Amino acid sequence: MRFHDKVVLVTGGGSGIGRAVALGFAREGAQVVVSGRGREALEQTVKLADANADADTDGGRIAALTADVTDSASVAALVGEIVGRYGRLDVAVNNAGVLATGKVADQPEDDFARVLDVNLTGVFLSMKHEIPAMVAGGGGVIVNFSSQIGAHKRLPGFGAYAASKAAVTALTRTAALEYIGQGVRINAFSPGSHDTSMSMRPGETEADRAERVKGQVPAGRVGSLDEATGTVLWLASADAGYVVGADIVADGGSTA
Picture (cartoon, rainbow, N blue to C red):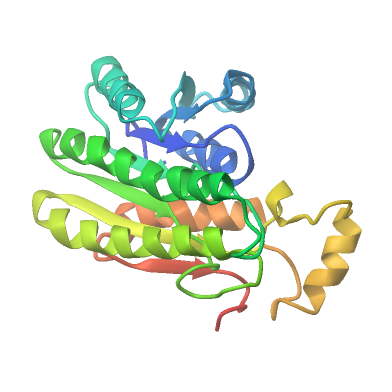
C-alpha cells in the first residue's frame, strides 16, 4: 500500500500498459483518475478496479475523466477537476500515445504531425499543467512514457515515433532538472515490446508474436503487463526517491 491516499493521474488509462498501471496504483491504495478521449474504454478500467476493490476493501478506486492531451484547455480542465475534487495531485503518469509507421519520404504529413502532437506535445502540455498543481501541493512525481524506440533504438518505418519518443526523453530530463528543487521528481519509462496490441503486427497471433520475439529480444519474450506496472510504480514510489531525470529502459535486453 505504498500509495495509500495518494492522488494519481494516468493518461491513456483505457487500455494496455496505461490500464494495467492504473489498476496497479489502485491495488496499492491510490485514488486514481484515468483520462483519455474514449469514455467507454475508461469506464472498463473503472469496472475492473471496482471488481478488485470488492475483493479487497483496502484497495483504492479509479475515476474516469475524458480529456485530449493535445488540447491545452482540455488538460488544464482535467488537472483542475482533479485538484478540485481531491485537493491535490501527487503522481502523474503521462502514458497517452499513438503509433503511425512509414518511411520518411512516404509518410503522410498529417500522420507525422499527429504522432508528434500526441506523443510529444501531449507530454509537454500534461507537464505544463501538472507541475504547477504539484508545486502548489508541496511536490509530486511524474513518469513520462518514452520508448526503447527513440533515444535508444531506431527502426526503419518508425521515424515519426522514434523522433517523438527521443524528444520525450530529452524533455523529461530537462524538466527534471528544472523542478526537482521545487519538489517535483520527474523520470521517463521506456518500454520495449510488452503484452499489448501495439506489439502485434497486422494479422499476427500471440503465438506468431512469441515465435518472432524469440529471435529479436535477448530475454526471448515480450514483457508482461505486471512487469511494466511494477517498474512504473517503483519509479513513482519513495523507493526511487533519489532517481531524478532517468530514462528507465525495460526491453528484455534489446538495447543492451
